[in-house]
Image 1: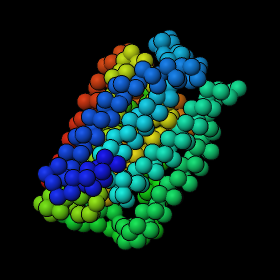
Image 2: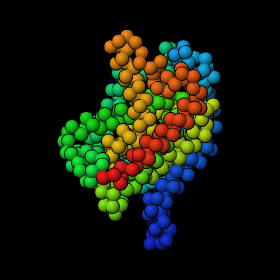
Image 3: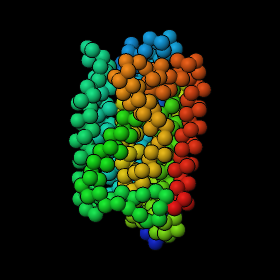
Length: 361
């Protein structure tokens, strides 16, 4: 909104030229969402407590119950704060007429509502359980199908997969690309949800991943940089750098209160929203395969759950002491802070490796 107002009021002036720069607006978006999160988190936290949306650890593994007992009664559903901070920053600094921004906003709304319903059911249902896995998956499939339709309608020739480490090589997947979209968005959503088990673990890792994709969005949307790095140029997609920056700032502000010992949790409202946003950004900038590297922490966490299930069903024994992997290390005796910081270091390394692929072509 502010972006459009400045363009209209300050037409043909130096002020308009400054606001044309995506890098300037991205920094402003990050700072705006950061300040919003820091300022309004105490208020949102009080509102959540009044609604009795509190963490329930009754289903925590018995070996971890004592360690996690301090988390009982901490306000959950803090993802509302993250969503509001992102929207506030985008309204001020993003080009709301941009198709890619609109898709990002739709994903946040859709996944945010799904996570909100799930958190509400956990708080107020008799069984203290959220949506069933089947119903949650079905909702995610419907939302992803809608996003896929909009992307196809915007560009019917966008059903191809770019190959990292090679110069301008892509594979036309046709309608199989829709299947890839399901895999990317649903996989990322649930991987982030699985990772969100320790104070600040998912939030910090997401900051690293979105930072890497902010760079990719800027490069892919920039005519000359995309030519220099031999990546596909997509006009208009650079605006996603502003979107990613807004997410980064919101997560940084939330992390201020979410770091150990956390005073608020994001809940499914936050984890599903941010996971879906990360997945759709990877798709829109046509860097889907790089997500395996950049989101390495989420991949490892999800794989640990899959391995545990398959190994247990095959042998009747556990491969890990407990899954996902961060809880395995807890059972090994590592402190929560040790695990989280080391996973953050891994997230930084994975993001840097992902960015290296820009030159390794």
